[in-house]
Image (cartoon, rainbow, N blue to C red; front, side):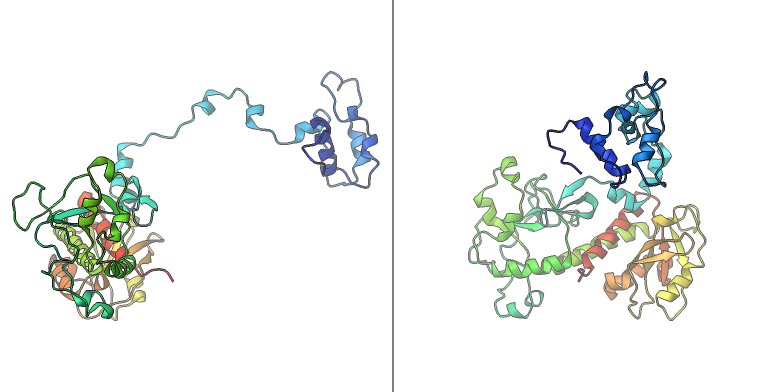
Length: 415
């Protein structure tokens, strides 16, 4: 095939390409073929002979379809719709999707996974990845006037740090005189925060409502950060300040003095785990008394009959007893256990009634034994080994997303 960017005219180059694609290389010399045999005008098509015989003379492939005598070979090549339909009709120019109705929005608002994916996309200040806001946790500097030292114990930092842990009330070597700014997950501590103008001695307050950052927190990541922060604890400016957004310097007078006050809890992995568990338990307590009557069309809870010994196979057999109902794929399976042992189950399981997988929240792994006993006391339905949970309003959707956030935090990293 000849080069495109040569001094050969485009029409001649295209004719050569056409001959190489459809004609046998064993035929007569293509350069001796007259050009007008392949290019005919509509006026001459009635008086001049068609190039059908010449085409058959040059091509030896009997399986090749013969072109129509009324069309030029160039017209047999695929063409752009801009050429074939230069003036499309109104049905093409004004083709639009169906406008969503209130029933569509109502159905999506009851699906926690659709609500999470529809949340605005934000950037994670820790990994610089973009993801829906529902999968991130809001953090902010919290003003603490109670203590200037890090509340941490030696057991939270590992064996290599047991000999160097200072008392909780002892002031750090380079600690500033002004109150310390702790970077804390304010989204999970809404009930414990107070207003900035409070006069309470031991109160925590936000210095500014718009100084927020978002992180995709994982237990494995925070454990690595804890070791790194422990090594840099004696520095005047902690490395955590590199994660703070640069826009803060434009919004407020955020400079070196404020960065010297920023601190990171050295026991953040365990602190966030306790905070997340308490956050989820508040949501579970709010939804535990809702919809006492079991109704497969409008109810939230459906008991699953699982026979002992409890295992994944026993759970699948219990799910086979459930009949299909509306929006069953939007729900999840809660494993509350029998109060004695911990059951190892996958994070997703297929529901035979609908043929699709739903999340599995294993409470025996997500909560401690004391917390699990407290959850089982919220409602008589929580005394069962497993229950199928289907969100139907805003509270139940938030409870499902809170459980998903806790499960994601404790999820082990991929090998």
